[in-house]
Length: 220
Image 1 (spheres, rainbow, N blue to C red):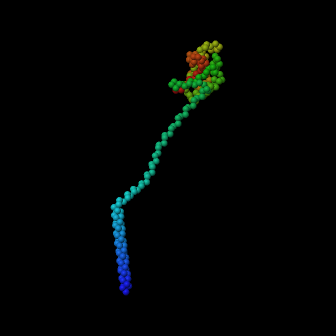
Image 2: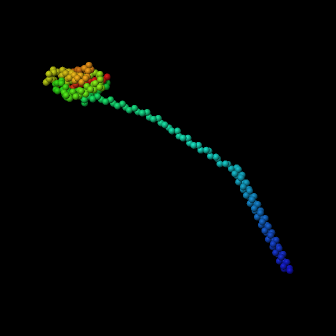
Image 3: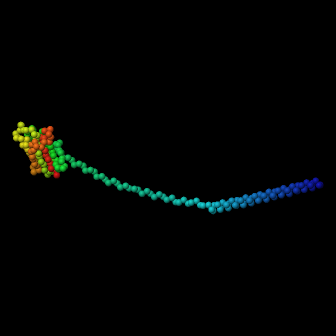
């Protein structure tokens, strides 16, 4: 009996001891949960205070739309007036023409060697063709302008001619040119003639250039 009782007592003591251990572990677990809860509450409170004192991020300023660029209009260049076309030159039948703007004259040179036979004062056909164009220019481009006809010869003495001198020959050749221009419609009132003989040479070495009839138009 004593052995049985002793065994029961030992079992009872072990049971009590086991129950005491379970109660202790439970109590410790409860304490740990309470500590965790308190720590979590402290952490949450710290986070709330941190958020309350944190500086809020700046609000970005609204972006304004760029104003449309104002078109720049450059003034159009002023139109350049075209240069006036040069006035057409009158047709003098391919004769040599010189112009003196200072004196206001236009001089047409009629070579005697192709206009007259040697020692004669009768116009050749080729000279008449050129003078016909001269008459046309005098009527169109130089209407009403005075014309001087100057006869010139070289200094060689006349040998075979019924004219007595170079002076007389130069006068007759100037008259022949005047008469032809009058026949082409040029008023005789516009024309004056003069024979210069050999007093107004054009060249010292080329006598052919000195034998000529000049038509001087006063263009002013």
